[in-house]
Every structure is written in C-alpha cells, then in structure tokens.
Length: 411
Image (cartoon, rainbow, N blue to C red; front, side, top):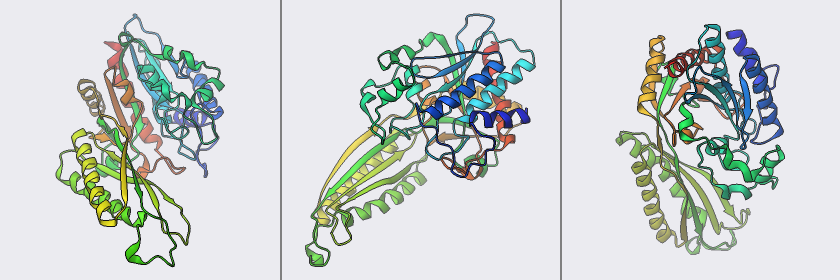
C-alpha cells in the first residue's frame, strides 16, 4: 500500500516528484484541474470503478453495491491555491481510493454503493467563491455568482463553460436527499493540534464558518510636510489601534470561552498610498471564526463599538459592512462518533477538535449525515509548497476510511 500511495500521490499531482519548489497551481475549472481529474479517472478505472461527472464538473468513481441502497460517499478535491501544496484535498481523494483498493483486496462486497467524489473548485483562490462543486451537489449554490470574475476578467460562468459544461444546467448536479446515506471527508489538518496533542488523527465536531467585515475609514489626505500634527485627519492612524485590538480581544475572548475564537485583520488598502501624502482613506478586511456563532457575533459587536470610539477620537468617518455572516456547521454526532470509534479500534489515538477552515463537508452536512477526519500535516504548513504529510499519516487515513466504509456500506 505504501508504494501505491507514493505512486498515486504523484499521479494525482501530475508530477514525478513531490519536491516542487514553486508548489502546485491547479485553480478551479482550469486546464490543470482537469488534467488532475483525468488522472483520478485513470486510477479509478484501474480499480474497476465506474466514473461519471455531473453538470458542475464534479467527478464520481462508483463501486456498485449489492442493493440499490443509498450511496456511501467519501472524497475531497484536487484543485489548489496558487503555489500551494500537493496534499490539501489530494489526501482525501487519495486515501478514499486507497480504502477502495484495500476493501477490494479483502474481497469485501458492499451492500450500499460507494462513491469516491472529486469535487470541483473547492478553493476560493481563483474567484473568491469557494466550494462551487459541493454546493452544487447539495443544491445550495447561489447562481448570482455567475458574473464574479477572476483576476484575468474571466467569469465563473465562462470558466465552467470553457470545460464543456453548460452553466444553465448546473442545478442538475444536485443529488436528491434519499440518494446519499452519508458523507465522510478526509483532509490534512492545516494546523498543529493533532501534533501538539500527540494524536494520530483528528475527529472534527464542527466547521467554523466566518463573519467577515469590511471596515472603511475616511479622513482627509494632505501634505505630509505642511499639515500640522494637530490638524490631521489621518485614516491610517485612526484604524491602526483596531489591528492590535482585534488580535488581543480575540485572544482574551477565546481564553474565557468554552469554544475557541480567532479573528484576523487580513487585508488592507490605503489611499492615496503616496510617500508624501497623509492617508485619507483606509479599508480593512476582518475575518472572525468560531463554531460558536454567538461568540463570533460578540467579537463583531466589540469591533463595531471600538470603531465608534476611534471615529470620535480621530475625527474620521468609519463605515462597517458585513460581507459574510454564515452560521457555523456542526457535523453529525452519530456518524462522527462512529468514525472516531473506528479509528480508535485500530489502535490510533484521536483528538476531538473543530475546523477553522472551510471544507466541502460543510455543504454536504447541510443535507446528509457527514463527518470529517483530519490527518497531520507537518508543522501545520499548508497552502505552501512545503505542505507535507508522511506516507505513514496517509496510511493511517486509508486504514480509518477502510474501516468506516466497510461499516457504512456493509450495513
């Protein structure tokens, strides 16, 4: 199995070696993503699975069951961020195929059909819109995003249709509720909690969807050499304390709460942005995450209150826009407990945790019982060429998925 994992990992990543100094770039609905999906189809055919794709570009490798029971589904995605790693998404697809290989070698015959899914365009790297494929499967894609453009001016609709699909038919990708029994996704952690707690795998209770704020401060631009300090309306100076406040207040709230909270000032735009001009305008993007929605709202309210104080103190105008306010997703307790038990019965140590990053599973959980397994990635490095999970960790993933699929599909 180890040799097969190494070989197939490289095949799915379209490389001869995983040592890629500039990383991997397979943006959603790009030629590169399609080539990786083609490699997925090849491996699936070698495992005697039936392959088909839907109107959103999702690709499924199906192992027919002994009955027409609902499908047991597992998988992840093959697209990446720009210059990203070769394990984010790929690990889930690879381990799912590995579990099928293992079950076939054992002579297992599923009662429920099993499908390994490769979701299209999970990352938001190209359009700023994430998980397009899995949203389509769950029937929750907002079609108003069709005109959202990438940095080259290509819209989501144009990108999808460039692959031979028809945007007007994308609703046909939705699967009926009674067609799927459960969904289990495996993913690299993209953090260090598993390593820090000396566990072998993480079992995820919930996915922390964000509140995202855009904070705009308008002051007055002026000459840096002639405007007295006491007569300035410096927008950058006005919002500078907010950057530290967001970090420190999030740390304080997280320390006293039962669920963790993180908040980040992650984007900044300053105008006119000239060396000899006082900043007259600044725009900050703030990302707030927790599985506790009330805690996210508390943090957002504190930011709003802080801005009111800064607005008066520095004589500027501050406007706050809520870009995203999505409720966090709690995964199915029964299925999650079953997955946890399956891993522990194999002798692996589990760690219960929440996911601060979004994944395809959060869309599937809106309609079907769903669970999420994390395997370690070294030093928590992700979305970077140095992203790495060991073959041993991938083997752990195969072992756990094998047990879960045997249990779910054999009932």
